[in-house]
Image (cartoon, rainbow, N blue to C red; front, side, top):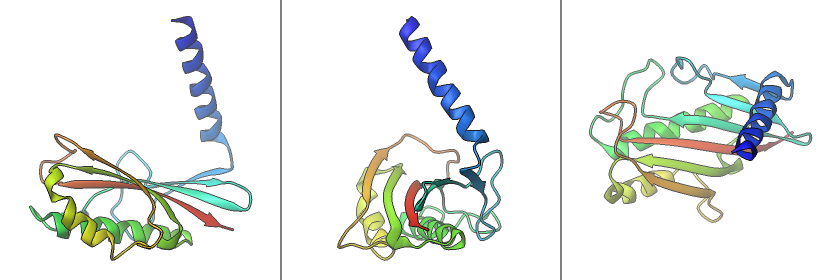
Length: 154
């Protein structure tokens, strides 16, 4: 138990120092909806490149309106549009995408998600990905949420 508590304290200490470190910036792109209580992106200076971690994106337009009620393809299209808009505003592009994490309500709807995804990513060298089927997201009308990580050269 002492080992777990000690490990937790080390992790919290590291996280606190990263929060105050000038090599980490938090940004909310103006091209997507305004977040409430979190940042859309964390940008970490790696020296010759930067890592951009995007918070989970959902099918909300710039004004916070849901796009594609009950339509997984339309929601996925808006999610990827938000991801693309965010990375472009930061100075990167979709070819610098290295990791996607999907949270989806209905696993049988993966094919429409893949079809939309393929319009946005480099399909010859696709990013690493994780898909998690969930019982619910933060709103009942949200069908999918996607996190993205980019490495953008300086």
